Length: 193
Image (cartoon, rainbow, N blue to C red; front, side, top):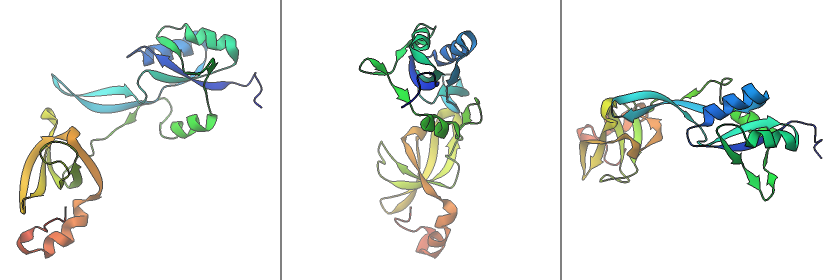
């Protein structure tokens, strides 16, 4: 059984868009260890594509503290709306879970999420007119958050423009498809992508 004086990880709910405020306050005012995993990514805005930092778990962060008194202090910090609970008890997050998450992040720095929709990447269309079709990215149109793809549509190689959020990236690259493309009559292997 865990000693009640051992620090334990808990999950705190934050007010929307207040994760960073709550994390800073918990660390600065209470001296508690806080884990607040974040992602650095591109997001489409009215002014074009912007680099933004978003929480991995919106409205949640992890805090390590000792005892009920510390938990009461956490509950009343600026930006915190409550603790994740099971019944009357605050839910404990195992150390192993936090350590596994931390291995993905370099310290407290946000993890960069790279644009994986580069030319040659194989995709599957997940919504819209071409739902279920497989294809290859030809060109990314970053200002519009759209992508040109090459797909086999009605037996012909067709270039289509789709919203990037409607695509699922497959594990293979165009280089893996070159042999079937080279061997097929007309340069396109029907159904190969």
